[in-house]
Amino acid sequence: MSDTIARPAETARTLPRILPPMAMLAELTHRCPLACPYCSNPIALTQAKEELSTEEWTGVFAQAADLGVLHLHLSGGEPAARRDLVELTQAASSLGLYTNLITSGVGLTEARMNSLADAGLDHIQLSIQGVSPESADRIGGYKGGYERKMAVAGWAADAAIPLTLNAVCHRQNMGEIDEMIELAIRLKARRIEVATVQFHGWAERNKEVLMPTREQVERATRTVAEAREKYQGILVIDYVPADYYSKYPKACMGGWGRVGLNVTPSGRVLPCHAAETIPSLSFENVRENSLSSIWYESNAFNAYRGEDWMPELCRSCERKKVDFGGCRCQAMALAGDASATDPVCIRSPLRDRLTLEVEQLSAPSVVPMNYRGRA
Ligand code: SF4
Ligand code: FES
Image 1: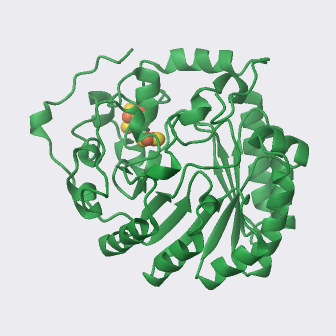
Image 2: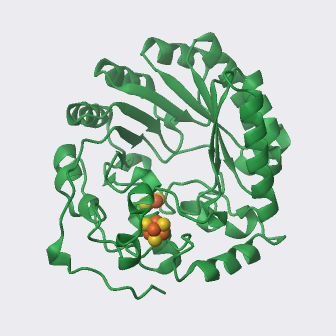
Image 3: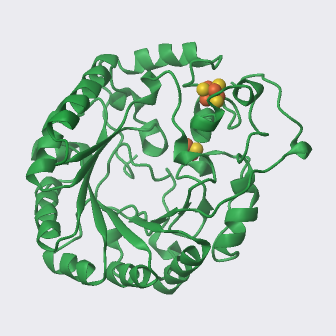
């Protein structure tokens, strides 16, 4: 279903001045030993044989540095599944890129951690699925994962690599946020990012199990506020609240094609991790075109830049430069139209229907989790 708000003619578009991207997320691989039911990777995972080679990734990093990228996030899947992770980190670091490894920890050893430190790794984001082996290993679908994460955090501290814990929160673990924050303190993390699950990718298939309740969300917001006060100057707590319970949508990716880009394991360049769910777009590949040309000129990146593409509701709204009309992939998933106002917005004609749906999805359910890659 789509909203019916009139759109400007496609031919009359005015693009804003396009600045260089600040950040690039390199999805080195989709391979991963874990099977989180909210994984943001696409349902159709890229096979190992299709992945960019070491030389290809190194070339992409060099292009990114030339383009003006400052932060390189080495992600996956599990980036440690790449045998050349240290080599890739070294290459990125020598190009002057700030390197951040986003990892489950599984696949890292103490020796490898020390090699990453020697290669110039600037920062680690370690995911946690829960605060005990029971909950973490159940949600991550990997026995022994929790113990490995605890060891990895220790090795990171010993190697003096700054650590952030990444906690994706949902109905199954939202009651553990206070303990997650305590865990971050114990593990000597400098920051914890508590992000409520986004319903793209595998999470979309698990809405009935993962949708938090209103009560959980309200409690989580209070817990975060109290912890921020308690640990001021000790731990930075970033919190991404559940936008399904918010009045306004988030500025997804800081606005489409404004600050960052993603490169998939096989080299497709996307404005966000879920962009391939928008069927009207096609995406160019670094094997065939330069990163610069894709960023500045490709149809996919230009599709939702500026304001001309916006429905009248957003174009005439004072928040259009705050949230840029919300998330395009969420509009696609919920409204069937990627250029609709994000249905999370209180002004969207679809908001009431969404509220009802969220209430139904957050009710107790006995549906089993649909683990990534095992569906
Ligand atoms: Fe944001 Fe559009 Fe809603 Fe305004 S109408 S708050 S720009 S989504
Ligand atoms: Fe694609 Fe929000 S996830 S724009």
